Image (cartoon, rainbow, N blue to C red; front, side, top):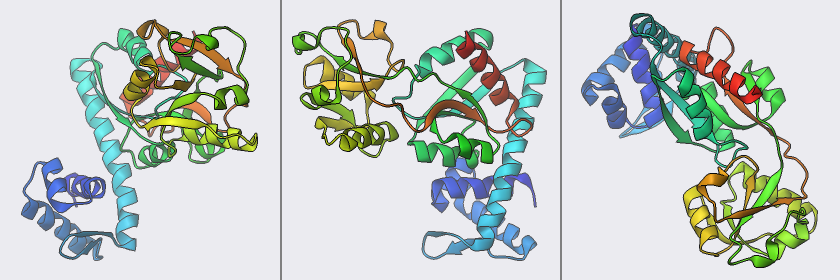
Length: 298
């Protein structure tokens, strides 16, 4: 058994396809298949359900895969630490982020980059449930999203909480002049408006739907999308208004838009920056986490 076989196994889990897993591993498909068959022969168990195409992992394969994720994560962390010893603190962090969280991710990355200018970032936009799965599977180094604190504690993750400053309605005063003001809007007042909203599978949207439903009200979603950019375009042209956690948008980027607070209960899940427990997080992730925590406290 060697580390490359375990990397191939993890790539196959991610890609769910032999050809794409081979491309991700920078080998030919026959080479990948042969190395995985050699791994099965060495372990004495079948790991992969094979047909004409990849058909998932066997029960034994799932157990081996769990170990492979851990070993590959430690191996990658070792490589990064050696590189930092040779060339200084540098590398690429994989970040999983939930849209419409109560912080500007770019602002956080800029603050951390001022301390560690050689860090690069690759960001995947995930649902809240996908994010927890990605953290558990070590396919992302950092998670920024909504979590159950009890679950984080049970799984031994480190977390830095993000402040919950409430929810705000974002609108263009040219199209909705009646909304200009500072007084918090009631839920009933919000339901009278056309809205540009995230699709119903997102945690933030589910949170909104739940509280309006409990109040006997229904949101008028004129436009639904997974794209924050499309939401802002819809708001800008007057297609509707938007609902966002306060702190998610940078006001300077949307100077023509205005905001009103919404009178709504807090979310049951907590927004946080999350990494693996000490000793299991990669050095890059741990340094990022500590720097982000300092920035948040300031």
